[in-house]
Length: 282
Image (cartoon, rainbow, N blue to C red):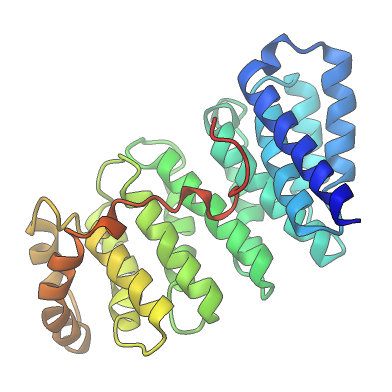
């Protein structure tokens, strides 16, 4: 059974890489057949297959017939499925779309509808669903940041990702959301607006006081990259003036440490593969 699962994982990984690199040369009938197979695996019982399947859907979206692609997204991905496995698969599919085909999603005018579904998945009490959606949120923010399109979608996703960095989230969700803030800010995008930075900064500052190493460490790295402390203190100086007294006290106490963290290797390490970890880089 394990050998069979390993073989299936390898096949999905190979399919994903093949479609992303050379899918444009694939015949329409074959692409349609593959799309049916992928939608049938949205609720696969194995986590790894659902994960690879989400990446495959993202790769398929780079070349698939536009009418068929929109039908697949609207009928199979946007409506929340009846089981946690299907909802996890749907969240991973959105993550795949945001990772591999965000520009096409914009051109097809699907960002608003994808965001509406994404927000529901980000608010899930299931850790797998929530974190898959958090990853998709990070990729969506990277795509939208610096452009004028879908500003309302960007604002909503930032607000909910910031909430998932906060104390009301489970430790697994909180540390993962922190990692997504880090991923966004080392992706090469322009710095977020001060309002967006502040929405992340307040829960991240709170996390630096926690005893759980994973929470504290991930928040330290996220703050260092969010404030771009490796190259400037301007953002930190501006934002400190708008913090409430409690947050400001913690921030001032933590800032020297944050500057040190900004020079460490862990701030250069991407958390890109938190979701699609075993797939080939493309």
